[in-house]
Length: 246
Length: 221
Ligand SMILES: NC(=O)c1ccc[n+]([C@@H]2O[C@H](COP(=O)([O-])OP(=O)(O)OC[C@H]3O[C@@H](n4cnc5c(N)ncnc54)[C@H](OP(=O)(O)O)[C@@H]3O)[C@@H](O)[C@H]2O)c1
Image 1 (tube, helix red, strand yellow):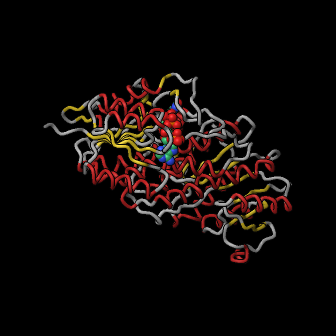
Image 2 (cartoon, chains in turn orange, yellow; image 1 turned 180 degrees about the vertical axis):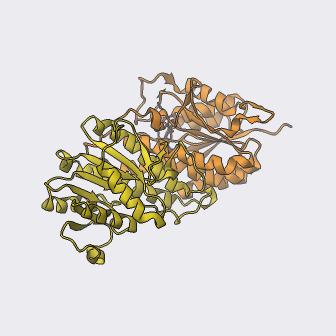
Image 3 (tube, chains in turn orange, brown; image 1 turned 135 degrees about the vertical axis):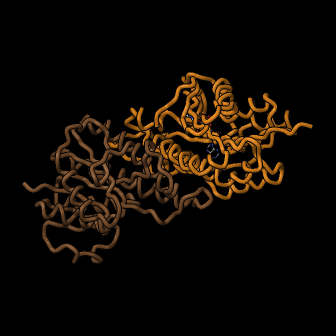
């Protein structure tokens, strides 16, 4: 019997995370899907169709306890993860400029989910990834975090959270690349998802198409030849394959 | 007419040196610090310096301080804000990361300056309109240095994003910026002198987003 390939996806209830989960199942992977929204049906329905291969795990990436509990659950079930996909993220409901009053609680919550969340996940899941085959960490970031292409006057909380995430991933890369870990830092495009609280119908991509492209990039190996390893360079790429400057 | 500077973190040795530099240059200084005023009132013996309690981690504290500053002046020409290195509290390495400290770093290092700027903007309509932000090369994505505490590096990167957004918005309204890395502790005096000269002088490329270290070297964001 061939060994299954195992991924963990955060924020899998809807949007891109649900799409990624479905795509991985189609490709024959076993998936641990972090569920934040208890009363959203799609992930539960999917797990009824795939009870052997899809494990739904309650997960709030903004909580140390929840992240640790999730890693213990995976430890008890499979003892390893091959690919970790940090997708969970929230956007702002108050896109304010510096001339307006910032909403403090929201600034902190966005940072806690978008920047600290993936770092918590990395911290708790490093041992499970070491036990796995891929040692791959994927991070759904955003063009909004690119300092060199920054153009917005509002959205401070979201933009800062993604820049900080990129810097955090640099630190992880620095530390873990020598051990053989590989990294994917990704801008998924403008997706018709639920980031603003309701379904955004204006985006360029539906969540399943966005997920298909994301998963293709996450799972593919990058160029390697004598003396040359593309994996030794950390880059942010987008759904069209374009590289984004920091 | 006297020029007026507001400086945060005046209890820190570097901040204190900067306060003295500005007083010597003949500026009036609004020196702010989270440490209670009595703790270091004697450090400054000139009437050019006014001391205020301000904790950048709290919006209320920032707003109260700015209200009290308004009793002294209706105008701030230059705002110098940002935390001075908190490195040492956390060590590098993901295993050592504390999520609570990562959030604390963000509170102080990225949100702190935003709170101060938001509260001071009404005082900056007239005058020099200059904002100096204190940062650290560890926040630079362009350099991608290793060895820092993760949360600290992330918070300064977030500050750099805020800087680019402020630069775009306020730059169109006549504001100029100084993003500055004060450097190591032993160089405090030299660095504060260089900072005061840099913060008050003009630069030929004000439109560009520039970060300089205390030696005048450009650091990529
Ligand atoms: N949509 C875009 O155009 C776009 C562009 C660039 C980058 N991105 C990034 O893509 C990623 C996926 O976003 P999306 O567009 O698919 O948005 P989405 O539809 O809102 O999906 C995000 C998922 O994460 C969950 N989540 C929220 N807070 C969480 C927490 N504390 N812990 C665990 N999960 C949590 C959400 O649950 P709730 O629904 O209950 O909040 C939701 O299921 C995010 O990182 C986002 O920043 C999106």
